[in-house]
Amino acid sequence: MNDTEIHVRLSTEKMQAAADEYIKKRYAVVGDLSIKAVEQAIEAAASLEGKHFHIHPRSAHLERTRWAKEKFPKVSKDLDELWGAYGALGYEGVDGQRAKKALESMERVVGEITRNTNLRFA
Image (cartoon, rainbow, N blue to C red; front, side):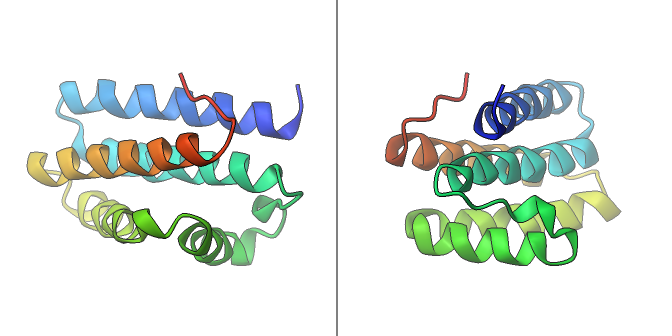
């Protein structure tokens, strides 16, 4: 299994887990898993161009987000929403509406990556 396949598998797993946690009303976990699912999807897309942000952990979040906003500008606001939800849900974790928005943003970002690459997230 190559890097791209690993990132696709991890993204898919985290997306499914985020949806499951939303049903269980574990909203803080939804925030965590949503952003991590998107980060894995971004890593998968970037790996198609030989980019691997995760190998530089100190700058990975910033560089990954910067690259994704340039490559997929339609989801720039969704990426900002995800980071906001990640912080808000991580500290409070009680806002079901915010968790729902995080899931919706996650789906839009991964959908945009799917439309612009040959990657398929199940």
